[in-house]
Image (cartoon, rainbow, N blue to C red; front, side, top):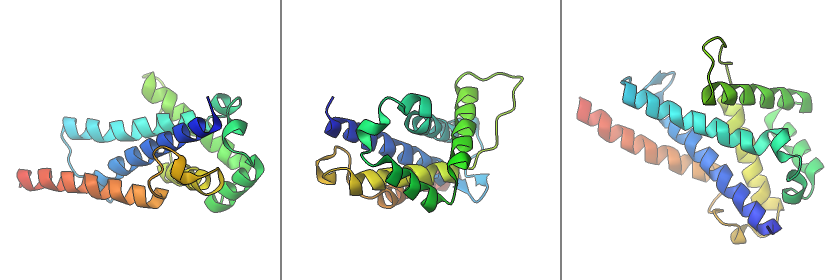
Length: 175
C-alpha cells in the first residue's frame, strides 16, 4: 500500500470518527438526551461507541507501532503540536488512551462486574480533529487524499447541523 493510500485511509477513518461524535452530541440538549425511548437512546449511544472504536484504532499504540511512521513523516512535530493544542502531557495522553481502550473493551465485550470508566469524549474529539487537520496541512497534497473535503471543524459542524435537523423533524412529530 502506498503512503498516499495510507493517508487517505487515515483521513476517511478520522472523518468517520468526527461524524459519529457529531451525531452523538447532536442528540443531546445540554446533559439530557433529546429522546428517551429505547430506540433513540440505543441509536444515539451507538454513535459514541463506534466513535470510541474508531478513535482507538487510530491512537492505540499497539495498533500503530508498525504503521505510525509510514503515515506521519515528522512524528515529533505531530506529538508536540497535539500535546500543546490539547494541553496534555505525553503521559497524560497515554493514560487517556488507556481509559478510552478500557471503555472500548467494556462496550465491545462487556462484563457485568466491571464499571465503565468516565470519559471526557471532548478530548477524543479534539485529538482526532488535530490529527485530521495536521495530515491535511503537513502530509502531502491534501487535495489528493480521498475524503479530505474540509477541515475538521467544518466537517463536524456540517454533521451536527445534519443530525440536529433530523432530530428536529422527529421532535416536532412527537409534540
